[in-house]
Length: 363
Ligand code: PMP
Image 1 (cartoon, rainbow, N blue to C red):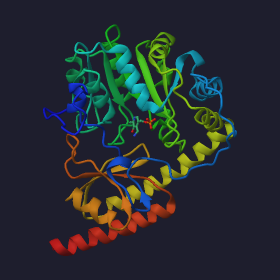
Image 2 (cartoon, rainbow, N blue to C red; image 1 turned 60 degrees about the vertical axis):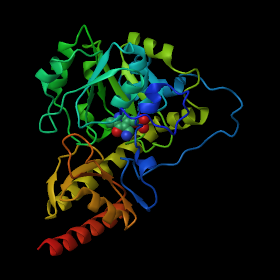
Image 3 (tube, protein in one colour; image 1 turned 30 degrees about the vertical axis):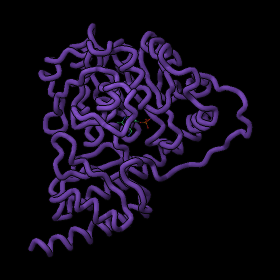
Image 4 (cartoon, rainbow, N blue to C red; image 1 turned 180 degrees about the horizontal axis):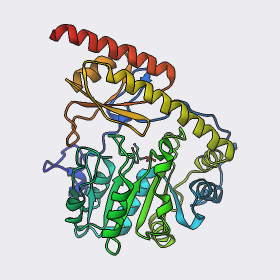
């Protein structure tokens, strides 16, 4: 949020709407190019079948999708909410648990931007406790806050780190009676052993966010999940729109969650994890790359000497990557999503050319 009022929106809009800086999504802030490596999507996308009539309203919580996701995640259907992407899950949690102008959320930058934007648009204060060395939670810092919700992203976007399980448990214990701890597992399929789903029976204040946008290759579908104790799910169901999941979305999600769909997803994860390891090795050999973050997801964070120049040089070759320099603690850092083998080859050639030319200029 800014102190500046946006004169381009209708004057009758709420003051907070006039001041809000909306999320700059990869799709809205960059366009063109043939190789899209700026939104952590899965380039290895499968194809799906649809019915051809849609005259009936859909179910609010389609049973095949709920049952499919519960079986996949190893929870009961009563512990699952399906929503329009994990982003809607974030918004529903804030709208259901944070009293406007009274409650706050705690988050740990650098991290995913929508927690703060959803909170601000709901008059909910945001307490920021920076990650230590961009990878560990600052537990004393978090314990000094008094939130209703704590957001922990693991693997974290954009750093790719897994937050240590003992630290997540410490936060769950500390806020046992006062706050929900929301662990965003949007990228967990790339490191499934790190999931905190096994902690759900022990911690009634644990909430887990999931999505079909990443490993399942369905970012265009807009389908995400919230996993939590049934009383939390019941609260969210009171706030969700009557028809949040369009019928074509429900049909495709059910196919993605079939045994064949899950096998296909796991195969693509295997390919992407290998492509990521190859890319990390390549990046570590480039003199122009000063730091490569270890990643457990389908993207890699790199520190370079001039992030804007690097992003522009690749854009000139039709390759989109994401500048992360505006994030706290990430000056001159870019994020590269892992694409298909052909895209990775084009990316590495273009990066090699850019860093070689740069070396000559600075030599
Ligand atoms: N959490 C994280 C960490 C993300 O990176 C994203 C998407 N970029 C989301 C949640 C939102 O996912 P969805 O597409 O399901 O809304």
